Length: 271
Ligand SMILES: [Zn+2]
Image 1: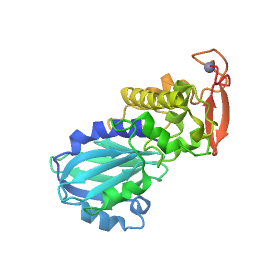
Image 2: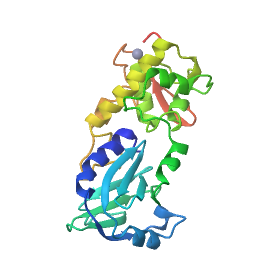
Image 3: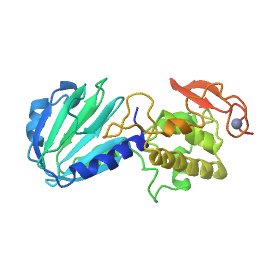
């Protein structure tokens, strides 16, 4: 599933095509994409809107219109935005812009969602669902500690919770915990100040590296021009069962936390 670095990569690549453009023609061919709203109604509402800015919050893409409305796109498992999508399979929506270019939405497994929000609806909608953005200056180790304090859930589960922090998923939590030298099953509220500082730094490091490598392509994630990310070549923990830890050489172990495959160095905390 695309996480913050993948969604941010898509945002950066698609924003120049969309910003300032008017949606001349909109087709939405999948009822699941907009449900419970009728896709024909949503397409008609979008037609004529002018894109002011393409933003991201957590794993959501936000297409902000000059009218004050916003289209909130969640790629879920296999959603992609494509420039010049002619000939692509699994296209669920198509935007034709006023300069003649097209942006397509492709989704093999069809878990992605498009939600059109009226002016004033966006902030409360996201505020209920998402914690802080981990890459903004206001995100501090102290703030992270406040989010985690008194929580008995495993650290990994607490970090997957989007209300703790926005944008982390299975890959980047495992990577961040490896960099921080913290065990995924530690109770979230048990970290001391030094450990919180390490975790804060490690979360940013893992996400920034993911963005620098344009995300991880494991199956269907692609950039809007069809190319792949390369972060998967630099994983320190995620998916590396029985491979040696880059720090201590011990073979990495796999467990499950909250039903999610989780990779870590078994020598922690001494790794
Ligand atoms: Zn190790």
